[in-house]
Length: 264
Image (cartoon, rainbow, N blue to C red):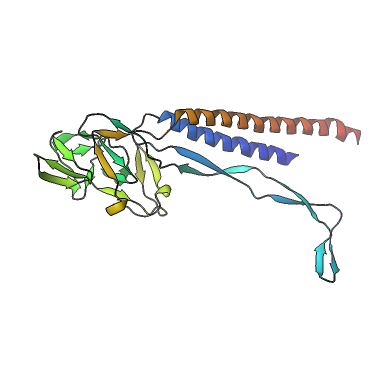
């Protein structure tokens, strides 16, 4: 019976982690370029149940067999395996601002931070001091030749990421990167990503793996509010079911110790 407590508790913890992910998704429904997270659970290894008082084995012409046959299995609960990020393309929103750039396809912008190079899908840029193209947090956007300087909003970005001013004067080409295993990138906050040992180092996207760019557009969050609310209801019901399991186990143990044990 005590095992039921642990099983129910593990289910409650797993549902709490799911709820945390859903809450974070809903909080970022209006965050440019945000990618929703999904908590993935896995079950603990199951135990095999064997019939009691039939220990040993017997032999026969073809070999041997257990005297205590398996009669079933018992689960030991679940745990959160990983927080999986869904890199599904968000929709495009026209802003009319020349500093807004959306990525159409897989890939990331590269930005310079005090901690080193980081990556983002949020293309709602601004022009900061000295004409530097920056993120909303003030991090310079990187081109293939370094920090991008455009002076004012009168610049153009073509589908390949080449930035031009005064009609045909090339400033730089936006540094768009890809990774070997993008699903293992780590979220760092401020809509930034950092590479990991599993994701591999960033490399400049070229050819078919290079995303297209849309100037005067931003990519919206890929969070679907209705789906997240439905999942929140499912999580609450699953949490309550695990809670009732623990309450039932507690009632059974109370009965065992207050009545059955006294009678013996």
